[in-house]
Length: 198
Length: 214
Image 1 (cartoon, rainbow over the protein chains, first blue to last red):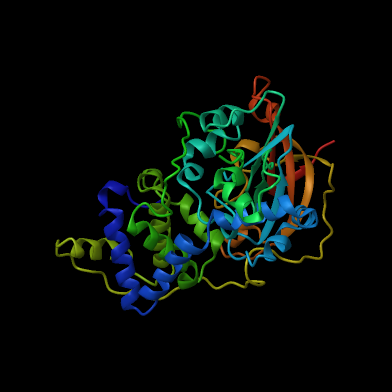
Image 2 (cartoon, helix red, strand yellow; image 1 turned 30 degrees about the vertical axis):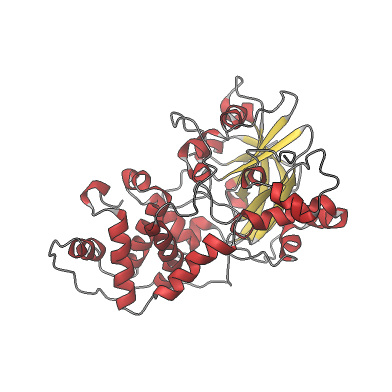
């Protein structure tokens, strides 16, 4: 076990220290670090997953491929990489709602959603969603009818689960891009539904 | 943490940034690079999360954990000395502190069967979709991906997933022991008792975590 944290300098200064030690040894450089940060701040995020959802809503053949082999279907967009070795897409239904967690650490489908948000990493979410999912979803703003069954997916191995939300009513005329703009990160993890526009 | 009580409520911050503070992004990047630099692997990184002091695990949040784990793996492999980070941090803070000499590099020696965690294996799967199984009552000393809350509980195989390296073994550099992985379904009442909120839990288990049930 590591040392008691209060005996150590604060995390921001330890980060600077570790970066300096590795830079001096020629093991890392600022360009590589900045490149990685930039990738996850600007290039990879929920907008990727939203494109997949919008395509599935508008192209039945794509949806079938997505539900059959998620990894290959998201690969059609070029979405792949760490924490996306095997993507399994689960479709929400009128009477069955799905929600994803990693109770062990915070495993998350990075290529589709980027890095996980705070609530996903929160011990409260990780401990409680498997035990009282309806209560937790309610707290998070999703009140499901009692007639809707709930399935929780705990990503304890290398499969990464991605929720295909239900398409909201009144969106028949929207383009794929307009649909993608409606899709939230929360809906693709299953703690929200996609709302109608406006 | 599955099933632990007393953690309070969960709220969503719609304006959350990817990294709340600049150091978090740098800690993430250093963490992501630490596996390669230390000659370890993803499972060793996850195991290092379990080796943190419980207060350290929680105090600096998710990226504080990444930072601490990066340091731990780099010290294990002799890339930096134990105490080097704190000494340098103190020097950066203006508290003159002697820095330890570099240790001898000591990366773990082990064979990898390829990149990533998924593997093709020849063994026939021991379980089929629909089989009744029980999660073994395992109490592993080192790393495992068997969550405590399903140990000894009865479930049903829902899906057969691609085989993957066994984290319990890979994390300790004792071989890959690639195995079949299954998604197993448990009813909430089997996990949390007859008063449980009605729900279904699907979880991924390595083959050696499972035993047949009649």
